[in-house]
Length: 276
Ligand SMILES: Nc1ncnc2c1ncn2[C@@H]1O[C@H](COP(=O)(O)OP(=O)(O)OP(=O)(O)O)[C@@H](O)[C@H]1O
Image 1: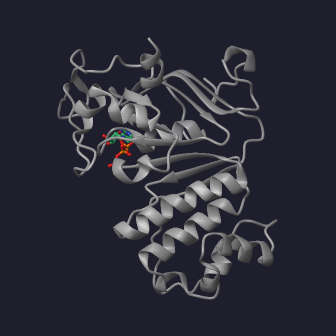
Image 2: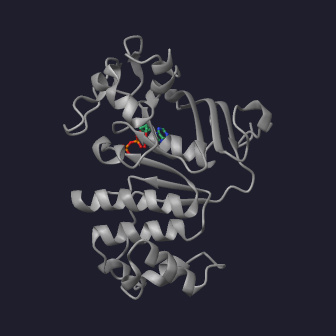
């Protein structure tokens, strides 16, 4: 089976210019475990999609499939030809003994990036003054901005951000999400971000996708937040994030009882249900 199956664009509902990545009924089974099941999702240019879910839900696994770093055992993933992706990892471990300036880190492995462009990328995220700082001396919030600057410096069609606010205080988290929305506007790119905290991402996201091995619910954040089934899943919006799911996962993480999920999996979005 090929790493990424390239379907004819006509197989999908949106034109290739709008669609960056389309996953159609994707599943993944590893060592006899069902890690992902029936995942259908479309990432669009200019759209911020937030993937939420509890630990072990398969968020990183799904990212890897969408990016083509691993292959699905079922279904199909289509990526726009020539798609440029800017990836921001959850965190970067830097050995304090390794001397590396922020500027050098940005230029590393990016032969076409000029120092002036690296500076511009840092300026864009409000980290221009950090150019000569050693990476190991950055605070948590500064490091996240530098990682974001590096991801955005490739002028990506799609920014993929895995828990971008790790190690950032609550005030800084809001700022970082605002920055991501600004970058989307400036670059015109799509954004896929993984988060545990629904409260903060609600304001800076176009669509929310809740994953727990399968898609439990999805839709526009405002509509989803008013949806009784959503409230049943996540509790009060102002409460800390919890994932209250009516089905059970056994010790190996498999779904032991899937029939009680309040959302019809892979069913209509909250938006389409509103229209029914
Ligand atoms: N290569 C692998 N082989 C077997 N199981 C794996 C493999 N990679 C991931 N898993 C399992 O898949 C499940 C989902 O892992 P994943 O890292 O995608 O979850 P996550 O939602 O990103 O979690 P977290 O929020 O904790 O980062 C976990 O139970 C993990 O142990």
